[in-house]
Image (cartoon, rainbow, N blue to C red; front, top):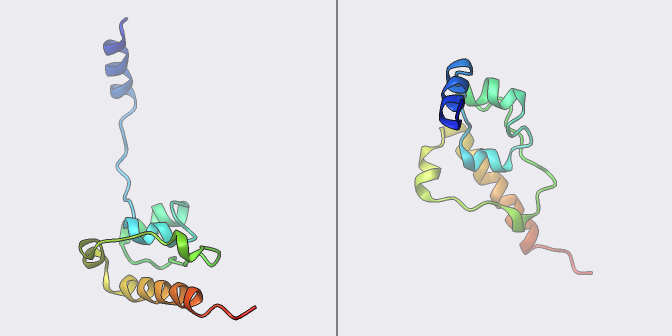
Length: 98
């Protein structure tokens, strides 16, 4: 059996299951990113019940996103995401003098 026949046999025996993926912008800052609750609940229903921002994320590591990506987000998550970004940016701007 050659490679192509083996691959076809594997494709027949192992049907790929389609899973819902969360919005990439939200996924990059969420603590529950790609965990069970994310893939089985939040991403499926797009309700973001378990969305929690990652407290230890460094402001330098905040992911960039485009206006198009922002517009694709549901209403609830837009506000939370913007608030998180503003808080992280304020941490950088108002570093106490040492």
